[in-house]
Amino acid sequence: MVNFFDGPIPGQSLTDIPGNSPWERPSEYNTVEEVTDHYIKKFSDEDVMDDMAILFRIGADLKSVVGTTMTMGAMKGLHTVEAGMLAGPKVASFMKAALKTYGIDAKETIQDPEEMSKRREEDRLKKLLAHAIQQSDGKEEDEGLEMLREMGASLEEASEKEGKVPLEAAPTESTKVEAKPQGLMAKGNM
Image 1: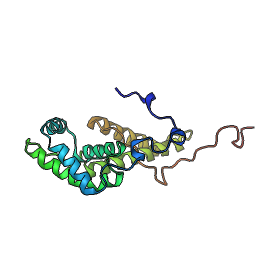
Image 2: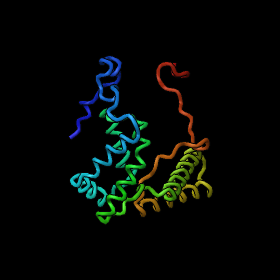
Image 3: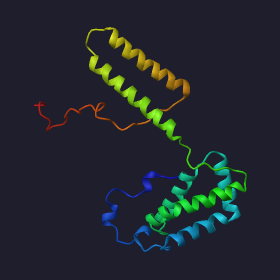
């Protein structure tokens, strides 16, 4: 089990001896070819691929697995981040071919771009509706406000029915709400 309290504290790298961490030393593999060969040899091991097959059978995707593998390799000082990024597609192709021997058609990514776009748009619309309702609070109830509330409720109901978890869409100009200054130095608090 990973204990988050065992990790480095903020600023610790500024007080440690330089070169103490694996990623601060020269990497073991210096070229993209060496990095690719290292991972292909690693994934050619039957025991490793048996475990990878289990992972992909339960729904893993190539982008996540290869990305995590490359990040771990860079953290261990095996190669640079850049070499890992450049070797990643070749390693993913190898893994895809190796997994076919297990009867697994590994997906590139589990996220459907069209579905993600649709969900972002729904979340954006929900935020706009919530903001419009908030702006109308305190005003007299009218047909327009009632319509906004019905639209919001309908979107929420559809999301719950489909079991969607809301995405955190980046705020757009129309959805940004100005934060009011707080604290001792904020104007108007005296």
